[in-house]
Length: 336
Image (cartoon, rainbow, N blue to C red; front, side, top):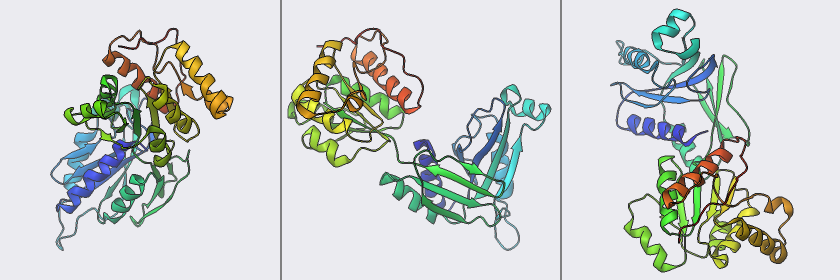
């Protein structure tokens, strides 16, 4: 359900439209210390160009060779590979050593020719609308069916049917367009987040137009923007203006939403005061207030905007991946 898989499908769609033959490869089972988890996706073009990964580089060369052979044309001009097939790597110690699989790891893969890309168009459209989608592939026929998924649903494979889950791209809304926001946006872009920035202060927003970072400015007051974007569990929201008039109303909406992460810049004392204001004036519950990460970011001793940005993104990734959150031992210093 990573956005990387959506990029792989997007590449596969573009290649198919350009006249290339494409095969998709999905990890369905792993044993031992396999480099990529079940569900990892790879697209291979008939000329050997690839997008994505199923092994971190261990078996891709062999897959490229297999794909070129599979796409050799038979007499009637039809690709030799017409239906999905199973591939296994590392089933013996010798093969594991040959392909460089660590610790005797074993991979089972499903390889399928991309004969009709219509389902990719629909899947990308639905995930762009922030829907969760399941893709069910019949290995016997190669037929693909799309349906709605539910939160927490995982990949399933019974030997004849493969069901994978695709979700929307992760997105990050930053309240405030200052130097720190630009540093956070730059790192978030490298992690393939869709970055949105809201700052009604025109003098700050001007910096967005001059900076090459791939971010999109959202017009309006922060609380209206948060409410209208309807944050889902793929959304993180961070308030960075250090101005209660802008931050507090946005946080009010964010803490009542389904955003998986809500954070706010400020010292420990500021966070205590902020929670008191939110509880007293806006009737937020203890459970809602407990969702607020503040001081925002992991305690890395950060001092510069770039270091603080690293700590913020690190905590967002930690929450996104559901790993235990270490208790901060000190507040992050906020640059003037």
